[in-house]
View 1: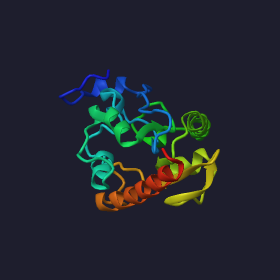
View 2: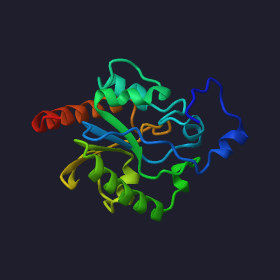
View 3: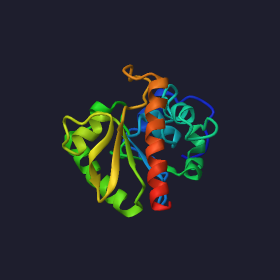
Length: 193
């Protein structure tokens, strides 16, 4: 289902996407690895990360200067050229993140630790405070660099870029992503990535 789709899915197509997964965009030694909560139904139907119209991930990383132009979800592999990849805490697509159980978050966190140890990104950037808090048992975690690492890999916590997250506007997201990228760039320079 990775071909570009130029139409909107109908209700039955969206419902059929429940439980599906979206392939990681990942490679060893990236400057950073973005980690979403889990794929939404539109994203799973499309087969590309952060594909739902209204999601601000792609505009925010462009506004932050991480990409030189606005990428669209079907171009997600281009992100590797800029030193970043994408994965999710929970792989299973749902209509809403509140459909995920605590156990799914914890198991997803364990898989994420294994992935980080295997691919060794310069920084893990988790896009979702609640997902991180639940998956890693850190109920008071806030946006920014975390005191915890995964085998020396720093964790940077960011807000969910969903258009439903009214607490952060595009400019706020871009500023926070720019701070992350500055940190990741400094980390990469220090380790010659």
